[in-house]
Image 1 (tube, rainbow, N blue to C red):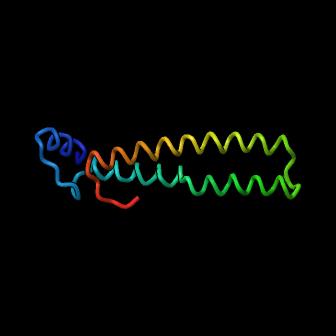
Image 2: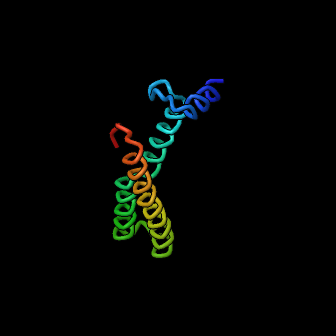
Length: 97
C-alpha cells in the first residue's frame, strides 16, 4: 500500500525523500551494491592472491583462475561505481559514498 501511494504521489510530482518508500529502496540498493562491489576490498584480494602465489601457497593454475575472477569483479565494480556516481549526481542524492 505504501509503495502504491509513493508511485501515485511521485507521478503527481510530490516527493518527500525521508518519507518516500521508493527513495528508501533505491538508497538501500545503492549501499548494497557499494558494499558488494567495493573496489578497495577487491584490490586487497588481488594483492593477497599474488602474495599467496609468491609464498608458494598457491600453484600457478589456481592463481590464474582466481586472478581472472578477481579482475572480472574489479571491472564490474568499476562500472557499478561509475553508474552509481552518475545516478547520485543526476538525482542530487546527498549521502556519502
